[in-house]
Image (tube, rainbow, N blue to C red; front, side, top):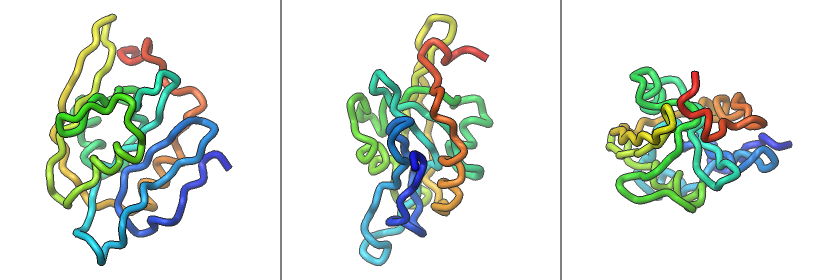
Length: 158
């Protein structure tokens, strides 16, 4: 039920998005690969919180978002602010995913915000788009617990 993922985009690389704990996880459907250049993404899973902010939840192993976590640049609960300089406030998950997808190996500039010691800190990360198996992203998305998404007060907490 609540975590079902559409198979419409089976075999395609895509970033996963979650709307809320009551809606299903979806893949953004893109045209068949034969009709466009190959697509790749950053391997990230997002949710939308009650304040309508897009929140980073998890990453697939081997993705550029996973690399950013390992380098200490990205944490679960970070708020997505902009993609390639375009603000993401009040954007749809479809728009977010469409902007994160691109040619394999191309760079995308992704800006996140988090609260650390009562101060908001923004960080722009250059992420390379990598081909990923939908099944790998699906496993990550299904493993994310969205019943208790992080609140803004917890962004800097450890």
